[in-house]
Image (cartoon, rainbow, N blue to C red; front, side, top):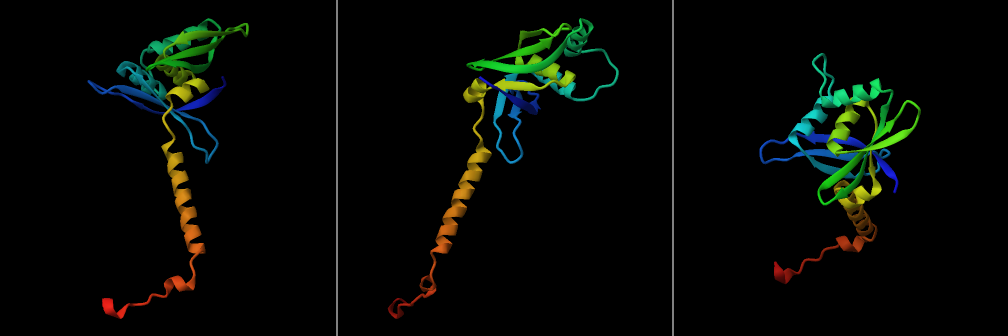
Length: 176
């Protein structure tokens, strides 16, 4: 199945009984509605994604920074991150790595680790269409727009069928 480009819409860092959440959104042309893919992740992983999305100066490398540096030192780089499957509430991702000789290698990864690497290296994130078909949130904005358009069309039809007689009100003298 084809892959769809995703953007990080938000990362919620939970605490205690509140789960952390990574919310990905399909990248669509202006005016078209997008799908949202919620992925439950751990608090540490949510923090790692958030930290990678912000510029940091100085400090020691975090685990995902180390992975990016290691790939570079070995003459490889990450070309993309792909959310490839979902089973129940567990998501499966891959890192698309390109070796120095141009060979592409796909490495199994947790989506949270893969996205944490993606934000550090600036590579695109994709989701397989089958994952979106299974786990994406309904497009409530699209449904709302469709309902508004139907209501407007119904009102327009009502106004078009009005006649002057519809405004002539006769009062029944007995009911006053």
